[in-house]
Image (cartoon, rainbow, N blue to C red; front, side, top):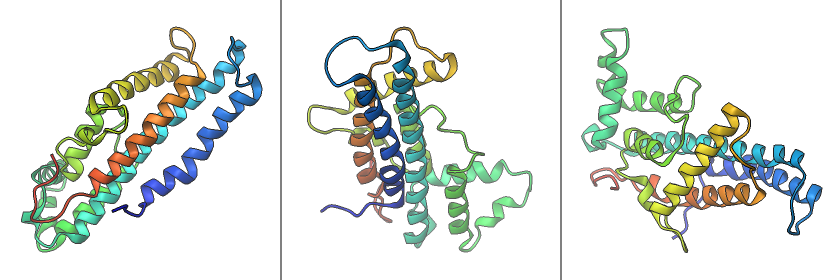
Amino acid sequence: MMLAYGQAHRTFLQEAVPDIQRLIDLHTSETGAGPGRRRADIQVVTRSAIVMTCASWEAFCEDLASEALRKIAIRTKDPADLPAEIKKTLKRSLLAEKDDLAIWSIAGRGWKDQLKLRADMIVSDEDRSLNTPKHRQVKAFFRENIGIGDITQGWSWVRCQPDTACRKLDEFVALRGSIAHRRAPAGSVYKREAVTLWTLCRDSLRALRSRSTSFSPRRPAAV
């Protein structure tokens, strides 16, 4: 059964997708679609597409985890039914507070409020736990925040298995880092690389969505 898109997906599809597609279209309009060597100054377009796609991917993961955690907080009746990793993350967060009495904020139904506050924190500038969205970091991020054991195992589609998707994602995030911190990686950044990354993120987000909405109280979290 196909599920309706959540807010994280709508934001990605309505805001990120058009901007990235415009960059790809600009490259084509400036240099044509045929084979051949492109002029050097068009590199700024392909580099921008890589950086913007990675940034959008990171934001999508944060938005999706926040949205899923809010739904868990609303739907779960008993805190005993929460995945162990969510409990651990909430405990660490509260123990890190300067207020010695912060841990008591989970009393009664306070744990629901704390989960919602955690959902807000995930998408705030204060939380930088996913500033390098490679597969290991994405895996840990979803495990710690919404209790999914290994979300990358859902990254499979036609002609692509999880290990391939993880490897490609890591390569592109590393390329993004090279562009962002050194302004230019070793060698050129081609349009096909921008299109490949964009396609990879698009297909991965579909898998992410189905995995992140699979939690149900009194059933073990997805592994």
